[in-house]
Each structure stands twice: as C-alpha cells, then as structure tokens.
Amino acid sequence: GAVVSQHPSRVICKSGTSVKIECRSLDFQATTMFWYRQFPKQSLMLMATSNEGSKATYEQGVEKDKFLINHASLTLSTLTVTSAHPEDSSFYICSAQGLGYYNEQFFGPGTRLTVL
Amino acid sequence: GNSVTQMEGPVTLSEEAFLTINCTYTATGYPSLFWYVQYPGEGLQLLLKATKADDKGSNKGFEATYRKETTSFHLEKGSVQVSDSAVYFCALSGNQAGTALIFGKGTTLSVSS
Image (cartoon, rainbow over all chains, first blue to last red; front, side):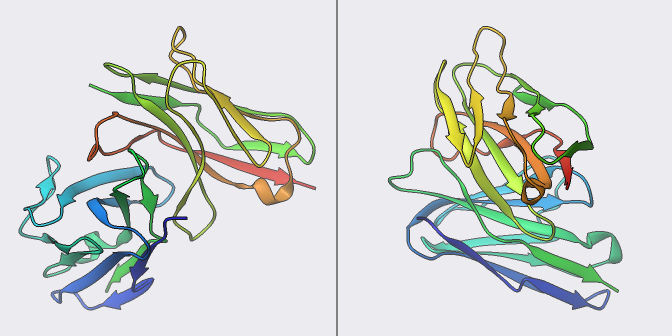
C-alpha cells in the first residue's frame, strides 16, 4: 500500500526559531500533497495544497510567509514554520495523493510541534 | 460550499454493543465519501470509502453506505471492541485529482470492557 512518512515525529523548539517538517511518499509519486493542522480534540484544518513544482495554494487565514511549503519532488514536501511562537504549537499532518490512486489521500503519522 | 456534519461525541459504549456514528454532507456534484480513524497520538488511517451513490464501504467490521437521497454516510459496527476506541472522522472529497478532503469535527468513541 501507499505509505507516507513524516519527520520528525516530535519537535520542541524555542520561540523565534524555525522548524522544518518533512513529508515523504515512500512507494508512490505524490503529485499533490496537503498540509493540515490539528488542535487538541479538534478536526483537521487544511493549511495548504501543494503540487510538485508549483507554488503552494494556501487557505484563507494561513500566513504563507510564516508557513513555507516546498514541494520540490514527487516524493518530498516540506513545511517550515518560521519564527515560531507558542501559538504555533500543534499537530501537523501531511497527506499525499498520487498517480494511480484516483483521489484517495494517504496520511503521514503527524508531527507534534511544541514551541516554548 | 461543501461541508460535513457528524454527530458530536463522546460516544461511550460497552464491548459488543452496536455502534452508529451519523454523518451527513452538503456537496455539489458527486463527491467521494470517507471514514478515517485516528488512534491517540497517531495520524489518520483510512477506514473505508465509497465513491458513488449506493456504494457500501466496509472494513474491520465497520460499514457505511453512500445515501444520496439523504446525503448521509453513517458509520456502523455490529459489535465494538475496546480496541475500537479512537476518534472517527467523516470526510468528503471532490472527484478531481488534487482536491483536498473536507472533514467533519470528529467523534470520539470510548469502549469499555
């Protein structure tokens, strides 16, 4: 089956620093990747959609300069949280959609970010 | 726009009880419908899906039928187990590639022995 990995699974950083989260499709080519944010006991909120080789499309209210998304290859997308603040602490989940899988999305295991 | 509404939890059941989690949707066209499960501290796993009206998705004893006339996709299981304790999300997606999922708010299920 299609597998998506995320790294790191947990990260703790100081306020003002930047953190990069990687999302990889391990056994398929991901033409589209999605980044979601999940607050405790709440649903997933779509942050942005990225297509390989194109600029990401951000949802309304998501700061593109704060949450930098790069989708440089068909197997890797990165989310960089710049100048992180405690309110950025959250669970970040990526998903990938690829060739041959119709419109099904495969989710990574998530990254728990804690900003001190 | 498209949206998903699912029953609010938490749902607390005894082992072997019958489970129903209601999900209704609003969408233009003919979306695909999904149920995802999230165990504590983990990401989402696809539980089942249906891509057209009257389709029944099933997996691990769970079932859901795509009802276009009632715009519903209710999740059911005849006999729940403690290991089914998790958060369940109903979601829909347009049928074009590159379309993001729209999630319901999630329903927490707690099963006790």
